[in-house]
Image 1: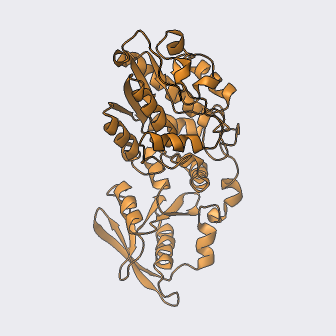
Image 2: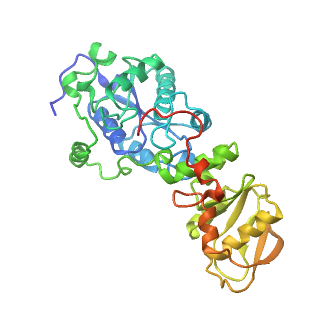
Image 3: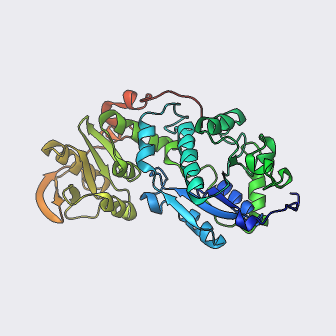
Length: 368
């Protein structure tokens, strides 16, 4: 990389907004602009679709990176707005349920608003030309900025040499020699830069967004077919095993102790918790109508994953607001039934597999 050129300005007085997801590319872009001397303000979107539950806590590495560089961090909760985009993407989905182009347009709009509010001169991202087939092809990157009306204001320092000159370049705030020319899907150059710059903690490359995960996407398609999820319901989609009992009801079972604790933390006091009374096993709940039949079938699933003796009945407790409201005796669900009900790529989605795994809402526009 070329040495920074001399410019007749004090960059410490030049504010720049950096979009920071916590992943490798956005971290490198932030570090690079910080090294060049700009007064960087990091912006992180807590959008509710990070792989971890709880939107604001979903990207601790973004916070850690900003703290290490002593860069102020603005966290914007755009989860409700993104959920509406996911339900009805104007420009379609990628290979799963990821509306990457619409998501990027929203992010740029919010970043531009923050840029104006903070008196910043431009904003920058960690995007790399050709890295993602839907939203990071060169023509699409240009079109996204144009669609928001921020053409020229968005700098992509990792691929800047491969893109049209930006306003900060034309105004002499940064030289083109200080920009990089990374392109393609390989992250070898980024990992080498991370080593050189002492960055040893970042999210796994290409990970972090639940909408690109095939398993999560199957669950989300199921949810959109039978319900109208809110932001909390999206968090529940990330947890445990999901079983479609009927169009009106779904059972959710924790996989392990941590999973059960996470699921319990997302439930309201009045929502049912179903557990085996006399043996260790998963915590479960019901989304939708908790009818007697739904409760009984969920109890049977709890016993199946508790590895209870299938030859006899066992007692399962139903609790609400910390109080046991019912106890029922059932046999464990047969494995074949559990597989059929499972909302997953390998499951039967309660007999609705063909519909659930089909495309719902919107159109395809890429394979990201």
